Length: 361
Image 1 (cartoon, rainbow, N blue to C red):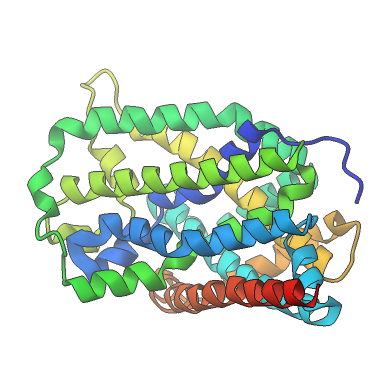
Image 2: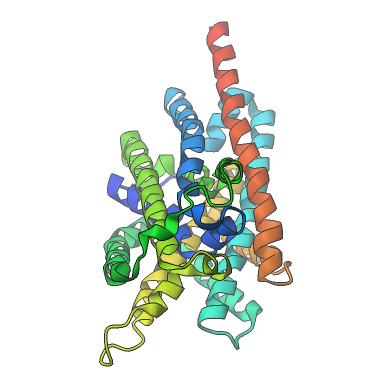
């Protein structure tokens, strides 16, 4: 597909932060706190330290072989058949994880704001918005992220300022929560919290220069991790030792707590607005990148035509779990652990193939 418009470093950075950093508002803290208790706040930092070298390996190889995107790199190093097979496996993992992420946010929207609405209707609306945005193309998505990004960051800073007087920093103790072994296990096997970064490697051809892509994605990833860890620390010091395991959506519970007097009521609606916009941008980009990955795997140039059926299939898979508990603690949790192992293996395979290619030359 020939693309005339290109993304700047700032747009790529904004997309990366929204794409990955939005995890600070979902059920991730609850998922982690169930096994690590109040030590959950620095688990993403451990996961990042573990995964970052593997991301750097992949980025290095992308640059070394001047590959157009991730699928092109796989074919260069593994050959067309094996490369496409591995790309298809990456797509399968990404597709199912995306479906359960969609379901997670649908549950969140229903529980917090539309508790009497049907799961199916909310899911259909989110998919419709994602399809409509994805069809507009990557440049429109990037431009939207560039315009919205400062507003989203402002809402986070405002939330932190307003809730700061209520924080009790002694609540981070014991520092290892339920035990160092549990903390390290979760930190290592939840590395796939950042698996979305792999999908971002598809947007290399739409960057103005390769340098824009590498700078934007790396800066965005680092800033995302810092934001997630800092907000998780806010949650850990805001809630008491026991309640953190029973709070499904800490971000919204913190927003509900904020009180600016009788004149400014329902202040949580202000934060909800920016959160919804960030969610829309993330899932628009997620649907677009999954479709692009599928199209590149099967040499479909006009992959945008597949956005509609891809969105429909994501909704079908996302509706399979019976409830939020099954979705979060069975399907999503197990898939995250499996995906982490897969993310460890793929860069190593590519690096080994790279060394063999060098020896042959």
